[in-house]
Length: 269
Image (cartoon, rainbow, N blue to C red; front, side, top):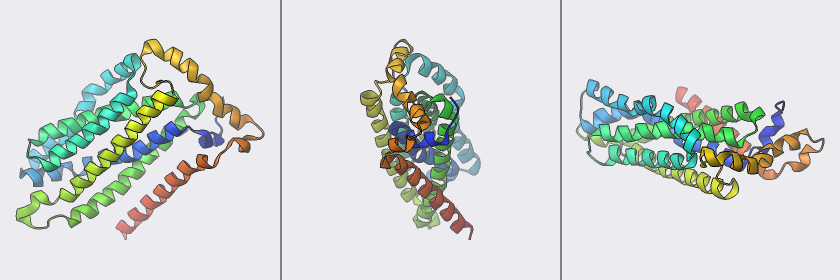
């Protein structure tokens, strides 16, 4: 089937939940990676070199886990389970790094596992719920939401850091507001991931979490639903199938995009 731009109006609600998860969890990941070295230096009172080495741990697990996870998702499914686990581990890592004095390497390893689990679970899940002719567009919107989230969260983190302690002797507390924000952000991401889990289970026949043995049957049951937007956009009366809620995600995403541009421009001014 040839791609039709109108297909975007018929993307499923579960897809837009993944987009919102990309905005929250993806924005949280990227923003934290920008600050983790300075956070470790100030909070745990270590040298620049030790802080830099410790911060690098936050990106080590995807190197080893992602190839295995690709095989795991193909064979056993459980994409929604791993997404919930990813958001939970993200929140746990923030709590460990921001509110305990446990060696930061442990918190960064937990963060690293979250970083390995989440993106692959989201991308492979999206590929199952969209028609193949619109998959590139769907993944592009997903990535755009992540970048918008990163921009907004970066600016919020900067503002919150400025509100932290400015006293040198109390520098370990300069990120208290930032880490509290990340905990709340992680909880929001976990709620969204849990919502995706239940929507998949009750509205999509467990397609995103079923194993290879059950996937063909599950996909067969959902095939007509997945391809229904193709029938809508090819109809001369396609506007009759568009409902008001179909515009809501596009309007919200556009508003967030404009917000990120305005905030970025104000920071440059």
